[in-house]
Length: 216
Ligand code: DX5
Ligand code: ZN
Image (tube, rainbow, N blue to C red; front, side, top):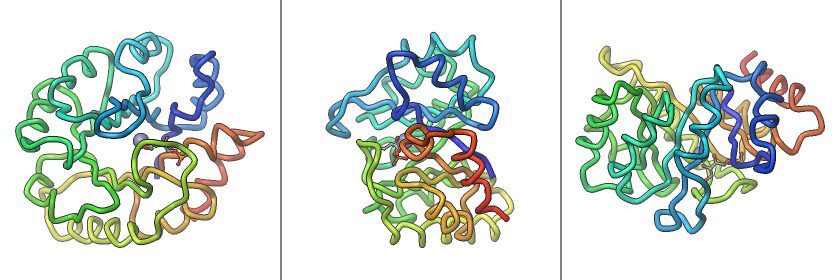
């Protein structure tokens, strides 16, 4: 299993120093890009994390909560994203947008809001490297985990088992803490995103270790 701390909960006044506190214990850096349209908030764009690229070895896991994300995927790739995940609900051209990401030489992910079914993305499952199951409604850190989303994690794990050409990782995002992490891992998640749990913890190394305990 992999841990992806979400930069959204870091202190933006000292981003590099914040990332260095989690880097030795983490696998991905989860980067939440919000446009004020797909979600109410505006966070940051490619120029912000491009400054961090040369300073960090972490996999940059870019979660685009952006309407018509195909407009920005080239910028994200150029800024150093290793994985670009777009929402199925945010584009009318999901297949071509994912193909565009892959053509940039970057891993492609597809995300599902809590209200969206797995069926919405079934036609693109053979194309993607990652499926992000939102376990809260997107837009804010620090929300409570929505238990009913776990059945989608199970469904995706079962589908992957049955289809030799599916190779996606299953990532969960929102409300992940030491309690909910266990449930996510039991359901079949491979990557745990955690923002407020890690960055608000007095000992971030300990916080990440407690998330990993759920895999045992
Ligand atoms: C929410 C973002 C999350 C957020 C998670 O829209 O996609 O990545 O940072 O924050 P926590 O872990 O605090 O729920
Ligand atoms: Zn996210």
